Image 1 (cartoon, rainbow, N blue to C red):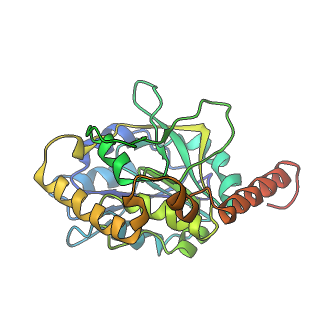
Image 2 (cartoon, helix red, strand yellow; image 1 turned 135 degrees about the vertical axis):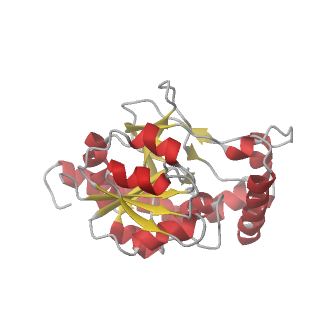
Length: 281
């Protein structure tokens, strides 16, 4: 292994995505797959491609499966990566300085055709979520970010859970993923929780990984919509100001607009500058 990284992937009937997106896994980092009782050959494919596989006796959901693997990580860095994401292993070193500075960091995701995928997001107000689903509502402003290569690190309120990284110590200090979310909104919650604890959430536009992005809730599926609605109810009960369409109070309380979070971002920037100048990391 050439990288002090562990990538954690949660699978559930993901054999096809693993073949397409992980077929080029080069073994330069540790790859752990937590399989949520798949009925296809996800386990066999993952093992054939070089992953260490933890088999769950039942489907415990995305968050709890990730946390099971996080408890056993021994490397300095950890990335949570979906089965339908292709990791550019040569770019991992770029994420390390940001992670060492105490941030949660995500690569800029792209679609397979190379177009940019807006995986960095703003505060998830209810009206914005409805607009994102195609509902015409007043006050909506879907805040999605996709910086161009060469841009600075971009602070966002949360990043899509398809690819999220940091030091193992930071992720454990945050408590990992909230196991009360079976699937959906766990990435929203992680981002807001990180900012509330002084941990910036950043997108690196110069690290680009390909994400196929199936978006199950974009089409009618009773099961996926049941999970979506249940997780949304839990999330907005925890963050009630985000139910309202105004920007000021919720942004001041929850988002990267707080003085505390701005100070944390400044601290990260100064530590990264010191690292780039040969100072302590």
